[in-house]
Image (cartoon, rainbow, N blue to C red):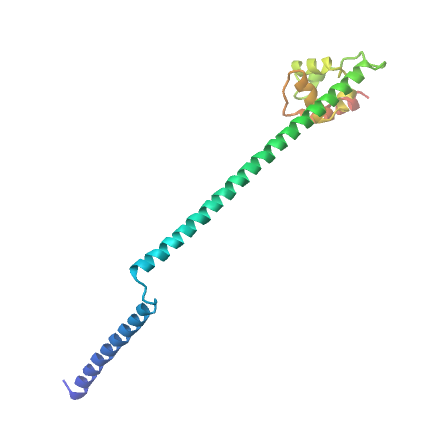
Amino acid sequence: MTAQETHKREGDGMFWFFAFVVAAVVIWWWLSRNDSQTPNEFASKAEDRLRQAQHNLEQAAQKARETLAHTAEVAQEAAETARERLEQTAQEAAEAVLDTAQSEDAPTVYDDFTRINGIGEASQAILYAAGITTYRQLAALSEDELLAIIRAGGGRKSPSMATWAAQAQALLDNEA
């Protein structure tokens, strides 16, 4: 081994020695900058932070309970309003049917509603009992009025009910 190689190996050793010393100083400085907190002080601060987090969580839970209660109240009010509107619509439909049935020019013709998709014998009987006996009368009703009449007669909504008036009008147009 030459003198130059020996000198190079000694230089490498010195580099690592100084790197170790610098790292030790940096670590010492980093650890000492915590204002020399004792473990008890550190634990006390951690407990304070935990208590604050628990308090925040309790506040959030209380807010969620209040929001849920308010949402339930709003839903209840909406359901009551919908029920009242449905009853009002049914009442108006029933009055309209009675007015039509009691009018002087009440029809004596009974059109065959079973030709309309979705109207069976039961729905036809309910419509006849309500005074709806012609395609013209059926075509003049809205879906809500039809639903109210069918439900008032003990029936239930047909999936095609929205098309009954249009189908009745089409049958009227074909007859003309």
